Image (cartoon, rainbow, N blue to C red; front, side, top):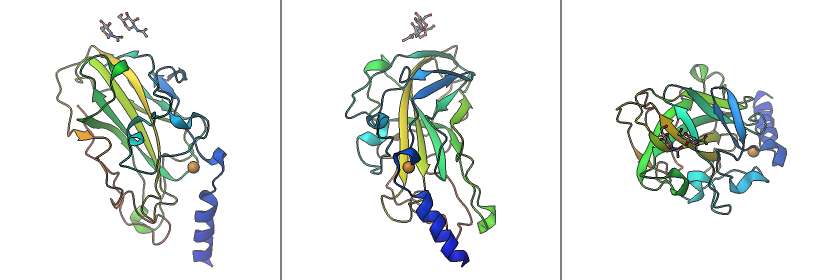
Length: 232
Ligand SMILES: *[C@@H]1O[C@H](CO)[C@@H](O)[C@H](O)[C@H]1NC(C)=O
Ligand SMILES: *[C@@H]1O[C@H](CO)[C@@H](O)[C@H](O)[C@H]1NC(C)=O
Ligand SMILES: [Cu+2]
């Protein structure tokens, strides 16, 4: 009976309604939304809200292969609080990573290729020792963090990645909700962000944090995929 309920919950949370999906169209700077697709490059799914599921696809970086979108670049002082807001509360049981990459020149014409991305923030899951898994990202509509004070000044892409895990028990079943913002960090320091990874390339899709059954048996531990967070 208990197991049947668990499976039913899994099926319900997997509903393929567009309303179940979401995007991250808005940058937040010190708590203020800067507007939909203003500082965030408009993603292919701006209508469908659908996810990326192929971690090796070009769309895994910024999800803009169809829009080819560029956005305007927001000035952000190092140490300030930035983030992303979703177009509706995050419906799925999920975890979140935020990566940044420094553009070699003008970020508005840069595609973010190469081993250039470092992780600046993550929101993980709680497993309660394998008794019950809870997801702080779920039912939230924003993810926020402080830009490290000693991040070098310059132009950056900021990429949010929310990983929905309700269907993750088979390969390719995890759903990635992605977008990239353009920021110009001012008043920064002389830190050396890392470890650096390429996106796509950072994941195979078979990591125990990407390909797993979150319902039964409940995992005893969970760590977000990708490198350690660079805190400055
Ligand atoms: C960012 O700051 C520079 C220098 O002050 C300014 O010229 C530019 O207009 C600002 N960008 C935006 C989008 O406000
Ligand atoms: C970035 O900020 C610096 C320092 O304020 C400014 O000189 C430069 O014009 C800004 N660049 C952009 C693209 O906003
Ligand atoms: Cu969905």
